[in-house]
Image (cartoon, rainbow, N blue to C red; front, side, top):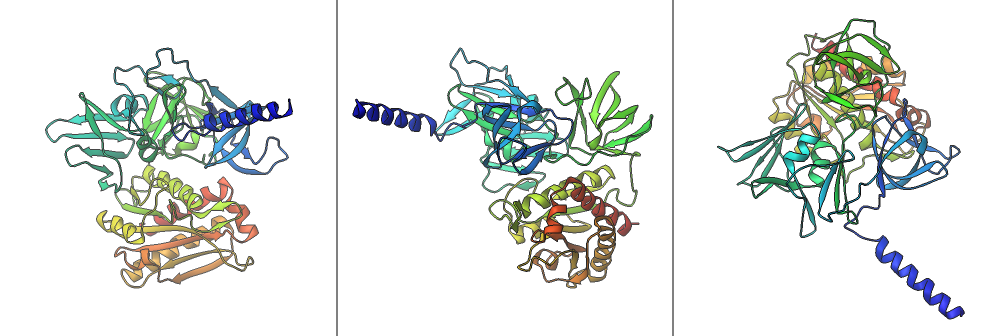
Length: 479
């Protein structure tokens, strides 16, 4: 009897191992979206006694692994974490009666004749159909055999015959090109994650390709909400594409979207939501992505500004206190991008997602852009945990006087806003500011290895003030 039990248990364990480990299937059992009015804590364990390791803004999609005692176990940044189930709206996996492959976009089965294709381990999805469902404008240029897509300010183009992919005019190395089958343009499922910031996975059991982008592109961390606006205030959309909803919450039906730079009249504002008139009817948008007061700074209008979020991809930068430098500074750079774009600047991001770029590639992007200025954003680290504060570097090789003025203008405002130790403006021999020919600076926002600085760097408020300092420093420089 004992031997039989052991055999049965061993067989069960083996079956579980075989079923549970499938490299072609994500382990998520459902998908959900954050619905809390404030950022939702992500914790190390399933109770409020566990440490918060991150926060998710309303509308963020999450992959749910299991649910118990009011807590969801989720996939988060490649690890397992926990969020309160009370603040997550679950989107169930629809039954697949036909057994055919299909696409599910934001919880809805995509109605299209174009099938999802599995080709030698790669999941291919119809580009235009999914693009339309996500609010991405996709068109086919027959004369040049090119596929173009517009997502807010982002422009993506495939050259079908040459098998090349371009994002904002820059060729993306290693990207899998589009393929045309029976008149339908197909791209790998992961392309929507790499290029458009969507959350994707393939669910083998239901034979479903999941695509979720229930948040505003480029807004992984919600900015600190602005002060309530008076009735009739003019405001400018700072997100790439801002969702307009029928009620002031992220789960309300979507009425449409507003592209970056759109001017709206805010009729009222409460709890982080602004009421506007959209296509003749009442609508609501997140006021976090509005620049109150209308178009700003004529000095910035038309200027080309390259924002370089350091590190990325396989290079995490400094790692300390549970933070990766690459993620922290990318958040700051994206916040600065929104502010600058709303002011009429042409902003070029050296990286718009978590990818590795060599220092030489960053310089080439700046030079090809014919940029007016180059800003490289970093956070510091040092073996002595007492080291703290903010410092700014410039190079004397090219545009030395202009670079020094740019560094001084940004640094002065940065220290005042962040209330950190002033480590000064210094000459530095860093590659990205030494080799760029336009006025260039490298910012060190604080020390991740210092307990006080690290505590500040974790907060949305500190990151938002850092972005505002970059913005206001550039306003001063171009005045």
